[in-house]
Image (cartoon, rainbow, N blue to C red):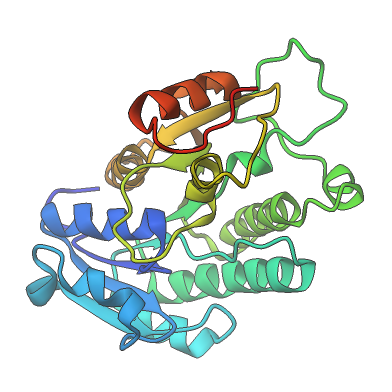
Length: 272
């Protein structure tokens, strides 16, 4: 995007893990940010007001993914939209409908507001859930999760995220919206928000003793700051298009607990 334009942007679900870092970095780069939250006065969003530049260039807007008018008001007048808001749950009723309808509402509002670009936060969960993929096939941005497999295994998070991303592509094509998607792997890093999010619970379970063993499997990881920076880079780069998997390293669960044991020897970290 041109350096002197695209300076007013909307971040949906601004109080979330990735979104909070995104708001922080956008403010540091001089953007004026409208962040949508369900309740601007909720204490769990207070960390956003404490960010550098927030007093001058951050507005928290009351909005709900299922309320089109609230999103329309937040997005109107913006040059770009970062759609990070999405439920994270294994309950199909709480996951699928809000994710899909919310995506439709955001893309429609962005089209009406004639924004320059929408950056959509998807997930690696929309990419790799495919039982028919050969074991030696490298997973890349051309891969899609199998919806029937997600449904049959009751993986409603991956199902909902996949449906939502497919909806985003369909709606953006229909509405003429410039859409670019980022698909992060498991995101870790310092929390800006006061609540523990789902991806950090992946590590926390090894520290609390709730996980007595670890799985014989590997997991891809990425730092939250890198994910936030990737959003901004995608927004600011005119040639960016399509989907972008965001990953830094792949570790066996055994490597993860070994690292945790090194830094936190006082905790009941599993050894097998």
